[in-house]
Amino acid sequence: MNFRPSRLTCLKDYAIAFALLALYFFADRMLGVPWFVGVAVLVFSAALILSSEIFLRTNRYRITPEKITVETGIFTRKRQSVFLDSVSNVSVIQGSTDLLLGVGSVVIDSRAGKDSRIILSGVRKPKEIAKKIEKMAIRPSER
Image (tube, rainbow, N blue to C red; front, top):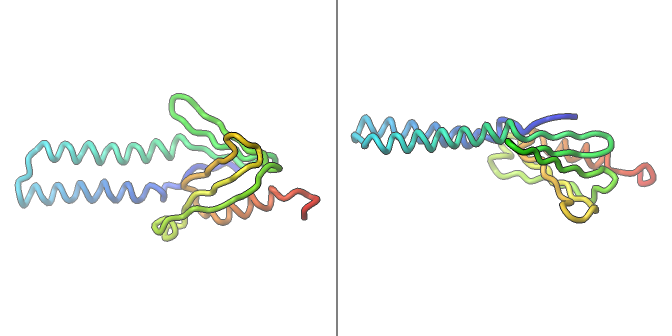
């Protein structure tokens, strides 16, 4: 199973950027705000949207019957894997907005020691993904 973070995780950033732009244009019409404030709002909003898009496009997750792999990075790719037979704990983290949108992060701990935790950030239906990982991680002798 290959997937990326859900666009819903960036909805907060999009809403903040849109609200700032709307507030500036309203304030400009009513109060005559200086032009440099508009440029600052535009740059900040563009940076917020761009950072969200970069996050979406540079994170990839792969779950196979043997291991879970997370790939991140723009210019240099970082690949981190955990073998399913070494998974010790799977948990889900969701904030209040994440609960409303049905997204969250799946945290996978491993008995492997150093760098033994990987996080699948911003995934849709994180509880279902966590249950699938837990089922796959159970060894045949433990079933």
